[in-house]
Length: 202
Ligand SMILES: Cc1cc2nc3c(=O)[nH]c(=O)nc-3n(C[C@H](O)[C@H](O)[C@H](O)COP(=O)(O)O)c2cc1C
Image 1 (cartoon, rainbow, N blue to C red):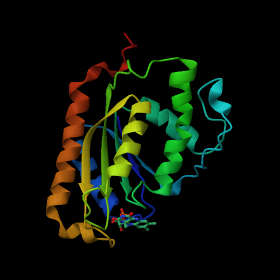
Image 2 (cartoon, rainbow, N blue to C red):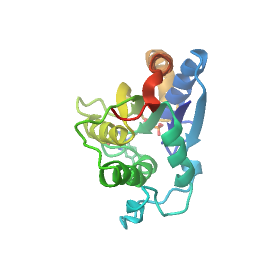
Image 3 (cartoon, helix red, strand yellow):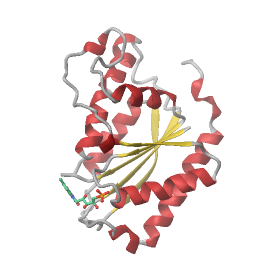
Image 4 (cartoon, rainbow, N blue to C red):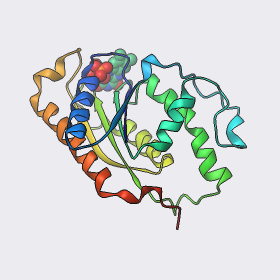
């Protein structure tokens, strides 16, 4: 199963349109896709109380609990977030910060070495920003790379679209829409080609 996470507060924004195209690409390549719209969920920010340190599970009882299970179960991930102040949206960042519980599980409880981590699963990051700066996505890419790492996931694909601001702007860019469709197809293919993700650490 591929988990598709919509991280924009805009329901029909540019990243939502791109993610929808990527989902169609994945479905047409035989994948099963589950969607999550973060703005419809109640996910509080991390409180940094480390209630997760005994079980690796966050102790705040909200919608994150279900997403946590889906994040563990999925074979691949599509994450879509607009650029907000050169990073991901607040909705997306709340989810990421709550995944500190997974970091605790991995490095404190299971005492796994960061050097030996095998990035078995694949993840696609989709983003859009209004400006065209060369470094527009640098901050978010660092954040997403380390978020995926906690999930034992490789950032295997990116779709980073500049010059998109108002809702619907992306519809003027068939090249972005086609790239999103292809990125979805490729992620589905990568998931099909890599059946070994559930093997225990060697
Ligand atoms: C709070 C906020 C912060 C933003 N920060 C940036 C930014 O740092 N760089 C940029 O190029 N665009 C920025 N934008 C513009 C959005 O990235 C742009 O409108 C994008 O297309 C929104 O994607 P969406 O329609 O999927 O929500 C910002 C917009 C908002 C609302």
